[in-house]
Image (cartoon, rainbow, N blue to C red):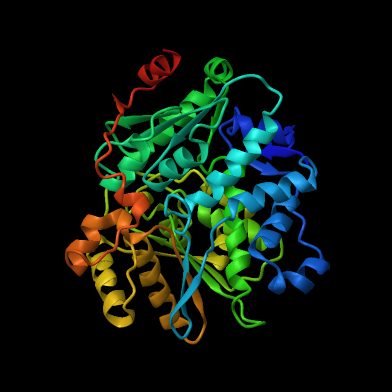
Length: 431
């Protein structure tokens, strides 16, 4: 299959270039030349398939022309070595737990698959691959875990100073070896801008053999579509869910739209954001205006210029009315988020993290106008990753910390400190 930029559909590149170069020179994002719905045989059997079998069929729809079937099956099986349980809080009120992977966040799905696909694509290259990634919280930890001590790779993670949780920061800064963390004195948007600037510098990108692990990379996005199929099949036949997606860079929601293009039936997409409500504002007005991000409790969603919005526009033919007909947006502030954490615990004895809490609020608001229709809220990270917030609302000792997080507490952190100037960042990379 061929892949092209959202800006220039007539300029096509093969899979290896789309994945390893990550960002087209025109600053668009790569998309497959076509997205063909899965065949009738899949839809006759999908409810009885294993999670890995579903993932393999989905991966083949995007990469099957370029990766042998047995290799692709192995990548998916090694990626999906953990489950994504669907938890029912009340009739029609579901939470999809995506935090059972190695770093306790949904980013594990994309990072683990991407690491394996990149290893396959570079198996004969003989050059070190530099994986450059910006994180607002969970992406960096998942990528660090997926690529840790992988031969022929080095990983450079940019994170905004003081804007990720302490345990998230530990996941980025304590591994060492081939993992380097850079603390940027700015916002996630600054981190994202610096990463993109490195790719748009053709000489720098070539010399360092750069690739990206952010959701601008199609290899990060496709595996996130696996769990939309996985959770939908758990509902009764004929019931199409409304998916509620806590959103920052909008990669997760875009992955859902890809699943829908493959034939998955969805009643509605609900984009749930914190005060960084650029996309919900667009869905209401048709006017898209990026702005500096605002720091909130749900830090992974603190994005003022979502990268994947251009893919969303592409999928809807840059038609605001078409997009607004399928996606509804809601935004909530920190006080509402805190109240939701307490309410979910009080009503259901369930501990929901600040991002899932925003999603639960959006689901509650949408169901008020759509009574009786089920919603699936994506719970994107384990609540222990936001211990200070959770204990402030639920009490000290209320959250059990998994050992894989607890063991990080006393490990020394190492991170380079940089500002937001592109030239200085490029010079650091060259050094």
